[in-house]
Image (tube, rainbow, N blue to C red):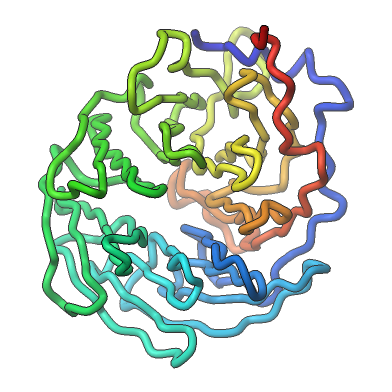
Length: 358
């Protein structure tokens, strides 16, 4: 089922090419590559954006309606921060770092504490709710997934061993999906968090770069280093439900196609459509149900390393910075480091009417 979305080059009409002219840069961005972005999902109050960076910091910004931004707080790890996530009520930010620690920052008091630690760099962390209490799940290169209760500092509530190093993880409602080295995908039901509900091998042939849960938590999308994305449902439906497609590839020149890593995938919180962003410096919006590309955008001038939608889906934030895909020699002083805020217009992320409906 690969190539299901068709070619994204020759068939692109002006209607399917998006516009970047209204995009606004975040003020005072990090000083090194940006690893992750997280908007506060709290239904009330302003839009807060957390930005994790290789400069060892997590910065929290307030974004105004007009896209103007202001730094509100920053806290630090001892080594690069690889992941960050807002709590559901928007009062706390969790972060995972190469210093092996999982930190939680309380925004009201601006205090941050180490909630727990792994034995190797902590790659990823997510908040979830368990019995009305806020919990954190984290994944590490020590090949474990650990659970942390905010009321019990330092001691993991549970630990699950994985087959390999954890590269990526996402949570939506009771669904947690963990992607590891060697292309393993572990599905966890957070109501029974100490064991895997299901384990599968990635349908993509190359290393998993990112997993992202559907907004309805029925499944997840994953991206690989080889310019390919897969749609996977947790419960097996009919065979056409799960499929993969090519993306983030240059047009062929002399029968040679340059492929680029899919660095991040974000789902629109209202429409359930999703974005892919890659090493090629482009992002695209897709409709998985209609199997259709909604919009593609021009090159932004550098690799896109992280993306996220605001709680209403009205802002799409994307980070432009070096992603190390071409080795250290390409990380020059002039390489851009910025976060751009893209105002999402009505039609950009709206699903298309499906042709399949009878």
